Length: 379
Image 1: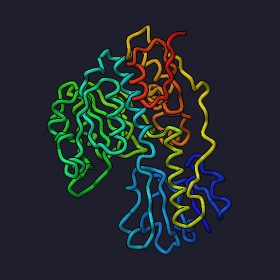
Image 2: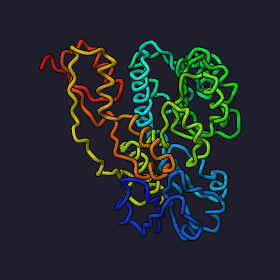
Image 3: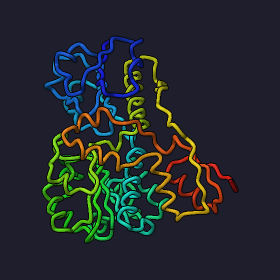
Image 4: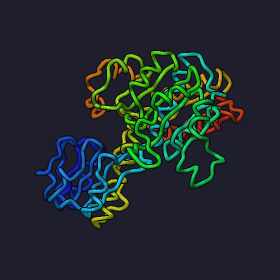
């Protein structure tokens, strides 16, 4: 048994060595000579799995520890009898954390109220659903757009795109990349899209860079159509347009889903998929070496500051998107290095909030944001 693994996949070293030969390589350096006698590949987005890489190899299964799988030529793999799997939903809570941190930070810096603000969520799968739940906990009004789900489930809970763009003060993208078909998303956010957005709206994209026309976004920013834009993904990454970067409110190097928890989920799903397919007896495997935050208990006094001020203060103790933005802007040419050496970040579920003097509203908010909550009557 020979298994090739992207060396940047976390928490996986030592997992499969007992069942075969394991070789760790940089994802973008894995080539035909490396995989010709391999049984399995465990990869990320930087390994392009197509005919050029796989033809004539002995690869039986490819597991990508990512939600997206457009780096895998699925048609070729299906025809060649190569099983492939991805990790749907693995980093959904991580992206939720990124969105919440961004909005709390911007609301504080720019002085707008999140409570009552209308947020349009385009794409309501694993990620979009969790983002919607969190924003409702913060008091936002949420509009959902997901044509495939609307068709399958009925349109009562969903709006069409034009209605969403007309009404939403904040628009956030959580769609897969589809280059063709009835639900094509490549270039979805084009000049027409931005032209239909509410004047002064905020635009966020953490899905795929290719779903946004960057020239159209720059034009909308120049014309002051938007109040700001938050991008974690770019059309030609790791190359990033410097002019666009200078215009963004928040810019980060494709790390929205990079919490330690999200990475561990992707790794777990990949190892289990390979184990199940090759019958390795590791179908229940999970990593046991996630880093623990220095202080997992956060004390909150409900008899004090405004609700969202307190929520912002607590949330910043788990993750500050500003730190990632500043680090990226100081090192624009280090896109891959910033991703590969990304800092430890745990999600709210790794923390426990102990609330004093709570009338019930704080528990509801913090639980809605994914924290474990303990209530106490007084200090």
